[in-house]
Length: 139
Image (cartoon, rainbow, N blue to C red; front, side, top):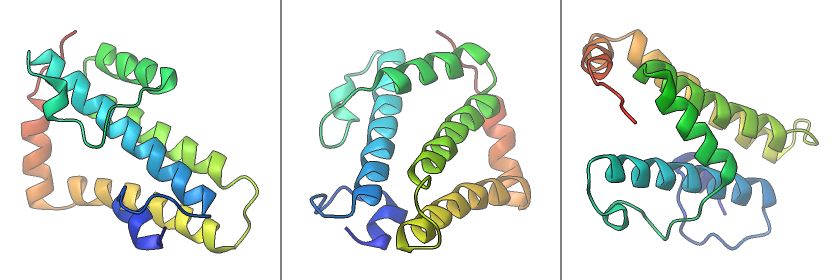
């Protein structure tokens, strides 16, 4: 598994000796698929049409999504999900000090922060945020 695959969340060629990258990709894949399935179900659509590579569930992710929806604020819900990503990356980095895995994890954290930079500090991002905040989340 390459650093590029980790940064892009690619599930291709998942078998590798790189445990940290595999665990991150598996976590992120599960999270994205559960979000897609949840949103499809809310809209009365078949979740199978939106899930990539089969739906694996995690009780942690399921509870996270229920809490995010319960908060009622789309931006706060998105932050809750990103905080869970950040915490998972912290767990992955526990025994890595300035090795390749640490640098990959650091890069993934920068990617999360970069997303917020684009949202809050560009005119296009501010416009998308305005549209995003007009979305109502319901159970």
